[in-house]
Every structure is written in C-alpha cells, then in structure tokens.
Image 1 (tube, rainbow, N blue to C red):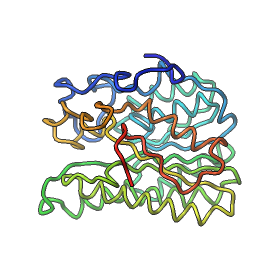
Image 2 (image 1 turned 45 degrees about the vertical axis):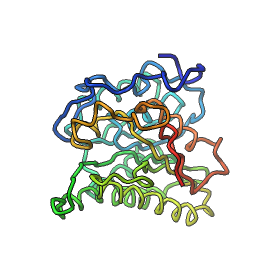
Image 3 (image 1 turned 90 degrees about the vertical axis):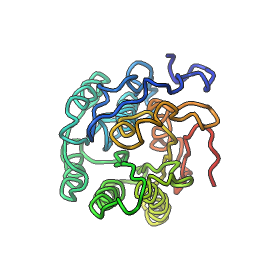
Image 4 (image 1 turned 180 degrees about the vertical axis):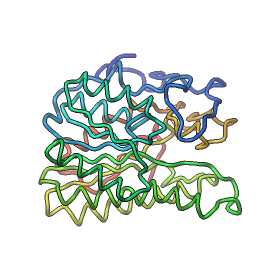
Length: 298
C-alpha cells in the first residue's frame, strides 16, 4: 500500500469485502483480532508538519478511525491525549507507541465517555500536561443494530446517545473554555445521518444530531476564532462493525453498495480530520465533509 500522496485507482486501492469479513467480537472489541486488520495508516501515513506544536484530544483513539486520526495528528506534529475504553488497552498501547515514535507526547487516559467527569478529565489533562488544547476530535461512537423498535430498550437508546451525543457536548463545553483563536473541533457523523438504516434507529438519530449540533456550535464560537466541522464517513472497516454494529451475515458485502464498490479504511478518513484541524481550512466552519465512497448526500 502506497502513501496518501501516490496516485491510485480508488476502486482498487483496498480490497472489497468478502466472506472473510464475517466475524463477531464482544463489545467494545479489539482491532488486533480483526481479519483483515483495518489499515489505520501505521505503514502509510506521511506527515508534513501541518499541525506542528498543536495539542489534541482524540476519542476512540485505540482503533479504527480514531486510531488513524491519532497517528496522523502525531505525524503532522501534534501532541495527543488518547481516550479509549479500559477494555481496549491492548490496541491503545500500540497507538501510544506510534505517537511516541513520531516524536510527540502521548497521554493515555482510559475511561467511559458516558461519564461527564471523565470527559472533563480529558480536557483538564490536556490543559495541565500539554499546556492547552487546540484540537478536539470526537471520533468514538456506539453502534449496535436492533431490527425492531419493540426490542430497542431505553438503556440501549440512552447509552448510544450518551456515547455519541452527550460526550461530544461535554467535551466541547469543557474544551471551548480553554481554546485560543485558531483552534478546531471536529465531530464525527455518518452516512446514516442522511440515509438511515432501519436496523440503526438510535445510531442514525445521533449522527443527524451531531450534524445539527456542530452547525449551531460553529456559529456560536465563530467570534472566538474557533472552527467546528464534521466528518461523515460511509461504511468503514473498523471494530464498530464486528461488535454488533452490523449483522454478521451482511459483512461479506460491506461497502459493496457504494459507487466505489468497497468499504473505506480508517487511513482514508484521517486526512479529512487533518485538513479540518489545520489552518488550510481556515475559512471552513459549520460544514460536514462526507467521506463515503461517492454516495450522494443532501
């Protein structure tokens, strides 16, 4: 696999899904146990100093898109606070090492984003140990399919909202107080916000809420020189899919319905976060960047 600067055919840059994609793990899952293992840019992402000296928080930093973002941020010159579930320590240790190998400071803080105090701790740690925060990348998410609303419990619905929406609110609220002009917040929506699957009622609803929250917050903090944007991935091969995010039997065709005909890889999402965090996107705020394999969105 070549780096992100090499011209390639996007339809064949990564393999299509097949029978080997059919697998399941217990939530929250480990990337190292997946087959094939998602490409999160360990061997491919090359930085150019676009985030030199920046101080970032990345949630879901142990695996999938969050892992790819943490690696990319570090290789672009940022120090990173890594947020992840305690059960994901095996994956997180690899990311910690990769950030340090990039010559940047990595601070690992395991915990549960459904806990407001933990979210506040992430920001406090960045401020005290890194000297501030100027990038917040909210990537972590909860996705569990439930085919029938009759089986969607209040606890399940609440856990999805706490992880996907409340944590974003708590982190943004805590971070904005410390952010200087030029800082950036990047939240994570999904193709589900525009084309919701019937089995992902709660998840799709949170992803639409993230879009709206971000557009409103972007206007609120624009006068402070803080930008707020969103990345909305399509079907991307991450642990989220194999811990109940999708029925196991459909994973063999995961991503096949996109115009590019294959699932995305986390390494393909990371450059979008880097762009929105960098000064290159200085006149962009309140926008959603759809990275979904070519599926049209409103």
